[in-house]
Length: 226
Image 1 (cartoon, rainbow, N blue to C red):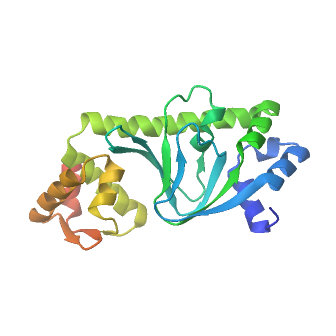
Image 2 (tube, helix red, strand yellow):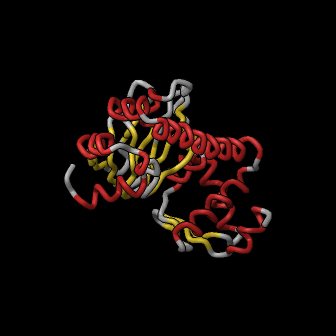
């Protein structure tokens, strides 16, 4: 990999960079590969699919669990500048469940393959500590997702999701279909559609083809309880 912009991405987003030897830095330079994913493409599908550490350069990905009956529960989402360690879950011995990862939108990522990252972990404690710290941070995201699913009513969960999306994008329009929302909030499409219709009848949102427009942010905040 010789593109200078790409190298700058690696330097900027790997916090252990200054702790690497020149040989270790060169090892990453020589083995980091740029990969483009189409919207909806599966990037990782369980512990047997161990592609390596992935740095998201552009676009958005999500990690989710898949039940035997096909239900998906989104654990967290990653965007530009985030690093996904679960694509290298075989390195983390205590990760015993299958996590699936897909591209929510068209995205580009740099991947350092598993063999190289294992070598770096074995020879440099800063790299190994980073992998486990990142896994712990993602576990915190997972616990937040589980807390919402287990302890919050669905109207409140959906209100939180819509409010967070609006705050993140700086727009009252959320360009997501009911199917996409259902995957991201971990509920059935029919349940999402019914609750969105209720929100619409209450004047909180307007349902549009391929998206949702928030009309009353105060009512949305009231549902959340803030």
